[in-house]
Image (cartoon, rainbow, N blue to C red; front, side, top):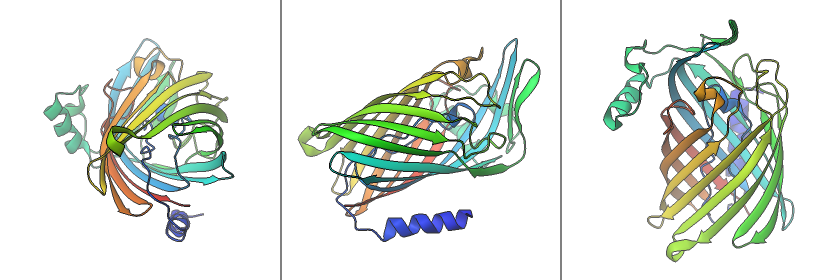
Length: 319
């Protein structure tokens, strides 16, 4: 199906269903590092039935080298996440999600340079790098694992999951999911492995005089075999959490974190150690059950996740 066809289908299910009252829900962000971001870490569990579309644009510049590995990531990645969830009965729910990727030289180099200067963030030689270049290059033991230097993109891996709620308020929910290798490892839209994951989520609403809600989750991904990336860790442990605080009748502030263990066995810290991503933004309730949200993400531990990211999403909740 073409991208236009996918967009039309998404539009139909978002606009033609009966909306439900809006409820605070995490933004659904991912680690968008060009390599570690290919892991099958699931988006936070949505609290309501419905659809979510999230557009993200991130800029990366990261040169690293060890005795056996060479890494140079310089480019810009766009990602459109499409997610759907639905209730089976009072306790059981299911969902599916995928993404569309683009990799290119991008337009954010100057913006990110000024961002790093303003907040005195590490740059690792970014200011002297060519503007608008795409080069995602990873070499191990003298052999190229990844060498991407021309614009590309495509559909990513598909994830399906089923969840059971054990408590209602506060909510306690367990979920298991499967990631299928529908993406292309050659074009860095997937990593070519079948993965399993499981997590447990705790959600509490009505805090601080009914203005705030929080969600925390812990989980693990069991990574399968990948021909392109033979040095994947067998397990990736993760934690993510969010806070939503209502500022006004239609506006709320949102904060989100994602922390996960290493995806690769690597001598490079940016690939072989944990990663942390932080997000801050706002949400505007357009109508009952319909919400537009936007924000900025950053990796406080430089190089473990994407550099500066811009995010814009639309969420529609159904009865």
